[in-house]
Image (cartoon, rainbow, N blue to C red):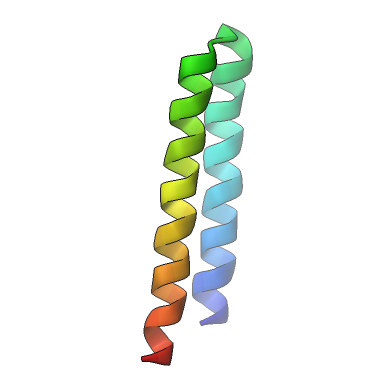
Length: 55
């Protein structure tokens, strides 16, 4: 479980860094919204994966 959590956090940081650089360079609000939605979807999937062990 710890490995999944750490891997998910690292993936989230890398996704945010990669997409954040593009969003800051282009300064497009719609692109920022899509990037945040993608990050939220990834974090939700991580949450569901971590809860999977509780069932």
